Image (cartoon, rainbow, N blue to C red; front, side):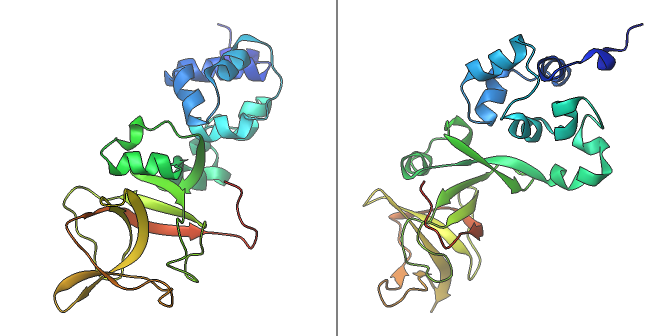
Length: 223
């Protein structure tokens, strides 16, 4: 019997094989790596030897990048002891303010078609990323820093000192603040208190999720 794996001579053949093996639709893979479906269709139909999307495809499918690129080594990250750490990562959507407001107004996270995705160390599917909307948490979180947010279930209450993403229904806007309790009442605290004041948490506000991580550079992002 012919060994299928020994006849996967190029990236196209390996990609077709792995999509069939994992029962992954081309459209779903395209969505996961933020490309048009035609890109995946092209890669599958030709005899492509390499692609600038090799890494993104490998991460999305849990593959060893070296195997997808060359056919050598372990096929899956799970089979490669050197790369088991990548099993802890998955792609999460990077949402702009318009998409984040749609989320706050009831649209499910999986229904939002994000333009960009980022690897993040989590096994949950309740995370997304966004840029910090204002300067209220400086210097802890600079304006337009990248923040990762875990969605809270409806009715869930943050604990003292959690940093939360809040939807202001009255203004159709998003803010990030530290959640605290003062004299038995919930309040939202900013670290940049020279400009932003402490605000009582009200019924007009909705807690979207918890800020779990933040990254930024000295150069302001272009996103």
